[in-house]
Image (cartoon, rainbow, N blue to C red; front, side, top):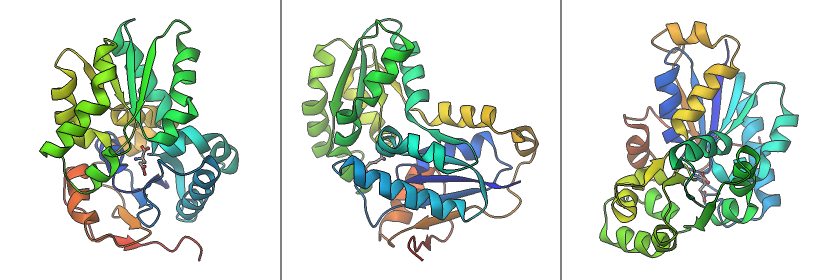
Length: 266
Ligand code: DGL
């Protein structure tokens, strides 16, 4: 039984890794945070596709039998190419998030926040229209949220002021639910919730992705009976970012084992 490969531009995807580790405690996880090249949000689709293929190839070389793209930007811009590149299932975070979001919005306006790359791609709007042609979707890019989360400024007045500025058009539009369309954003959820108000349901796609993974893995049942992985989980980064372990522990909800350096071009 192979491992589950997961990648993101940095620590954000650890929120997804955590959900997967909870759902499938018997499966080994191999995580790659592309800390040398974070953030992905402002970069061009061509560059994101190249980074995503390099990340996917690195994980594929580690004997994985599913790849989870725990990054909305890469899910929005590179998922098709990754699907055709590997023989194993490749899952993005976008579709599960939209599905949950539409359910939570109950026919009312749905808000989506994400990086500039994700929002510009219109991938969320298109995915929502495919599921419900009458869906009203209000999108907003929140580029400063990623560095704020990477810096661990999750309960800081500056973050709250920025959140007010970003989210005001969405609250004015009367959104009923808000998809956190970037895997870094769940860490800012308490501030975001405060700003949009308790009536708006926040949707984090991590749990939905973990459930979809169980459905897609032919031998998931065998994995879900075990309570520990057959060998230790591994966490790689492309640059030893000083704060990765410290901030990463917050995203993962537990201490990170020793973080290893990945050489993608080796
Ligand atoms: N966490 C990623 C996402 O879900 C990327 C953030 C970034 O690197 O800009 O979009």
